Length: 252
Image (cartoon, rainbow, N blue to C red; front, side, top):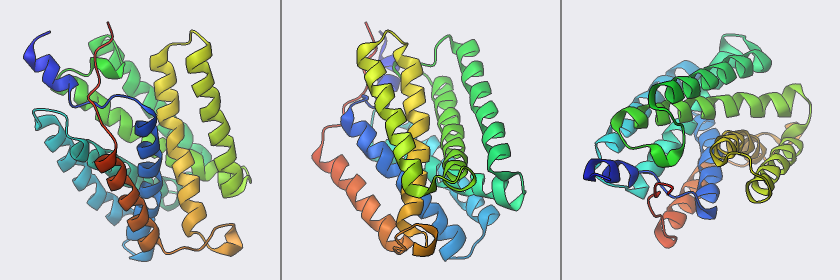
């Protein structure tokens, strides 16, 4: 393997238990952080989406230009995808009056198209094959769509389906547990299971985030979005500092 491929691979983290813990924390932060800007600071969904989109684009550029894997850069980019995903989904579902079901359908289609184009262009959507700027662009666009889809899906489950925040969290938690079981007990493609889990952590984070900051009358805890976001950011920082984050290795 040449040095350029090794460098590209070194920027993609190894998928471990800590990876999933930080991912769920980041998706929850995306919900509380997105709502902080759009609701608590009253900037609105469109303006907040513009701000977070600019941060997302800047973070992706820094991530792609980086010569090696940096946990802080990677997880900053992930958080940027969750925040822009939150406000973008809310703008589509509420301001454009598409509705949760319509937004979920559109975003699911967009995600599938992104994965298909990635596969048709480079031959694989496995994380350990992210070895060039082109594959990184597909990787981050796909992640952005998955985060946006997760927000719409979480809201649809909690509100339209009537499961509430705790019910939604239970549903997505059980689905993730089933994927983990399938990973160890079946021969289903690990790439398929990875993306299924990656997508489902976002609606889990969405309903947990809403549970933390929504009014008690709506089934939430009515916590401050500012304090909830700060706490989640601190937990992510502690995970980055105290746990090992190794770059992914190409499967043999």
